[in-house]
Length: 183
Image (cartoon, rainbow, N blue to C red; front, side):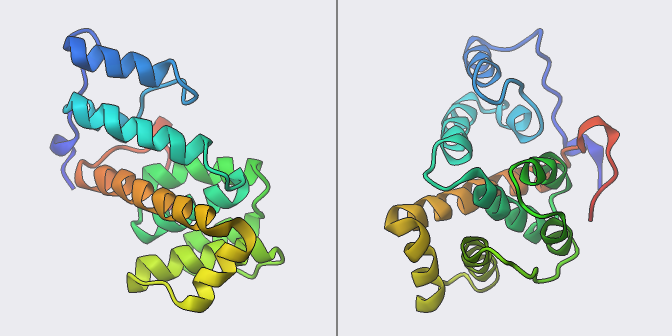
């Protein structure tokens, strides 16, 4: 893959619109502008709208961070998005997702879960990515834990992190800090 597709963002030459969105991202909970967010700033309006959705999906849904990060990892692995994985695998571990679950997902294996909510989130994310549908049983399992609102927010997380992963892959976003590709 060519690195020439990864657009360079010159922070000293941002347009007013880019600067506003850049400052909003850097001043938010993320605290920095990295990876796909830098790509999106090539289109400041897209960057503004996407980062706003992303802030909600990452920090404000009713899903506990442990299962939200699980959904993000399933998405990152599905898209073999190295940058996404490198950023979110450590967060998932910090939020309480077991190391063996993280490693199984990275390796394309179905993990063994002890927590029923993790099993439900994994099944939903995996099924939606692979079949583009959700069975009644899988849907009911997520709703039993997090309600319809949780199921809707889960789909939002999966969709947003699909956009992230597609951006990473389409524009060859390099891994942070020279990390090795996990896939």
